Length: 348
Image 1 (cartoon, rainbow, N blue to C red):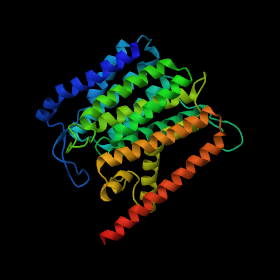
Image 2: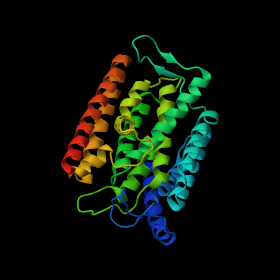
Image 3: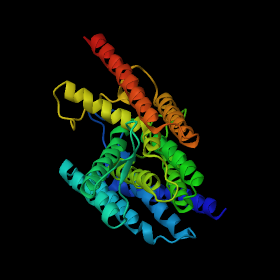
Image 4: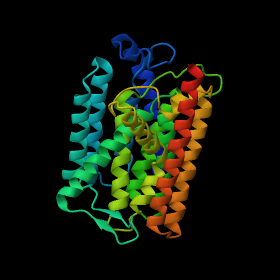
């Protein structure tokens, strides 16, 4: 009950933060303006990330748990929001964002002692355990990959928030089932902050456009939060969730980011090239509304995540689940690629 009250506090503080910061953002020109790649309507304040952090920090102080083991989580989150706000305000170089992400992940590893030590049984043989340096490299790559996957999926009103909310709910189920109650409490607060953000960003019927965006600050904050708990829950010494289950929980952002990078490589482009070839961009071109895209992607992610959780609960073979995950990705990639090719033909 107390944790539910904390979640309500986070939700209210996030909304209050938006109301407080929005006029300030307009005065300071902390806004996102439309261009060739960003086809939204009007100038939108980029304050979602800071508002969510405000709500989360206040909520953490109300929890009846020790936050000592989460100090690096708070520090890394604050660092990414700070750098993200600078980027939203002054358009920092991609290298600056990249170094901030590296710093946050290193804080998680060396201060928080959260890192990947094993990958589970993925190849029908035995659990794959990582050496010390391999563990650091894999954790760094995984952390950067997920943070940027959330950033890349943030291309339609409400979409990044909706997907992260679905993933947080699945992680809360995971944490409760495996009795990681402190993690479940913080995940609940994160979900409440996302709900507060979505109140202003989700494409409700009748709403012409989002009132705020999360910006790089928000996408990096949420991505880092997911990284932390995906690793904490899957690498714990006490009743861990299998790593392959976490892939299913993160399915849509991983499919989208990996699919787009493969497409760019096939076209001879840089994998960090900015374009409108993501799955949600293609659905927009096919005249899907932002609301329909949110429902389609959000429900798909939730169903795939539930499949992963059910497989973990009933102790399905990890290797089979990993191969099944790869098969689902291949299907996703070919479906999206066929839609992309059809659109290209129709525009000629």
